[in-house]
Image (cartoon, rainbow, N blue to C red; front, side, top):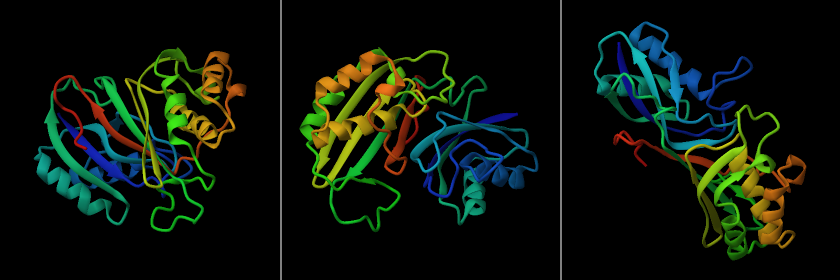
Length: 253
C-alpha cells in the first residue's frame, strides 16, 4: 500500500462541497471515482479541509492509499484525463510516508475571500467573487479584522451545524487588502470552525459599509452567541489557498 499526496485545484460551483454527499456531486467523489477506474479499487481521499458548496480551492491538499503500483506522474495524468470536463485538476502528486495525513499533519490552513466592490454585475467572475455594490471602506474593515486575531471563543462566527468539540481557535492572520475594486480578506489558522471565514467576512462587510464599527466586531466576538452575528457572506468568493505541513510536504500555490 502506497500513500499519495495530491494538490488539487477546483471550481466549487458544480459541487455540493468537498465531502461525498448522498444528494449531489462532490469533489471527493469525482476524484475517488476517477481513481477507482485507474487502479481498479475503491480508494478514499482525506483532505486538509472540507469546503462547502460553492467554495473553491487553488491548492487543496489530500491523500489517498493505493495498493496497485503506479507512479505519481501516471496517477496524476490519469486523474486529470478522467476528471474532464469537471472543473477539477490535480496540480501535483507525490509519495509520502504512511504516517503523513492531509488533515491531521496539517499545521496551517490559508484562505482568501474575494469581494468585488462595484455596482455593475459580475460577468467573468460570477460565482468566483461576492459583488457588493455599496462603497466599502477597506481601512475600516482591516481595523475590524485586527480585533479578531489571536486565540478566542469564536462561537458567534460558528455555524449552528458545526461539529467541532470546542469553539476556541487561534486566528493567526486576518488581513484586508484592496486592489482597485477588489477587496481580498486573507485568513490563516491551524484550523477553522464551520462557516467561520464566511461569517467573519460578512461582518467585516458591515464595517466597510459603515453599518458596524470595529468596536461592534469586538462586541460580536465577546458575545459568544451566534445571534450576535451580523451577516454570513455567500460561498462564491471563498478560496482555499493552501495547507502547510512541518515536513515540507506543503501544497503548491
